[in-house]
Image 1 (cartoon, one colour):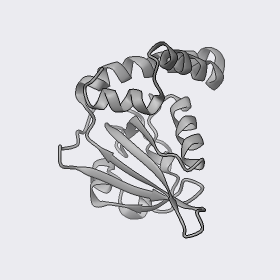
Image 2: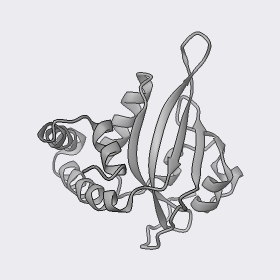
Image 3: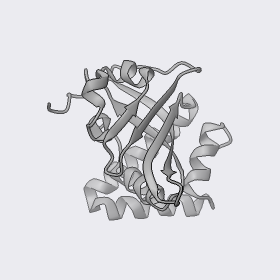
Image 4: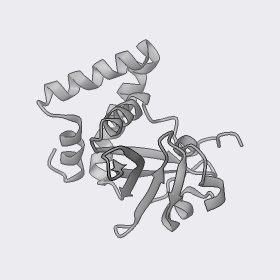
Length: 172
């Protein structure tokens, strides 16, 4: 199954919606809730066992996912705004929290993600930043994109998590 061609059709989460999924250590989906199935347009059987990247939208900078994987593999949680691609080419934005689930010995067992409706005002800022990150990525790869993001965070004297959480709460 090839990736769908992105369209401008946006689906929106309701205030009370929470998308929940779990992936194995390689990022393959091992659990997805009903809302995830509904909004993505995929059936549960089409999602289970597939890489979570099945819903990765091309408007998402790679550096965001690198940061995500770096943090969760270090057993640190991360928050992020993510634009996802639906089966029909539509898209939806989420504010995601991703964490590692640990076993009784403290080893990573799987990864757990809870996504909710993002702050619409925050998306205006994020879309602009993501556009700049993608330009940097095209110019100089993920390294250039990472430098751009790091410089942005330093200029704001904040961390990535604090920045996106502040945006979600309407504090920036």
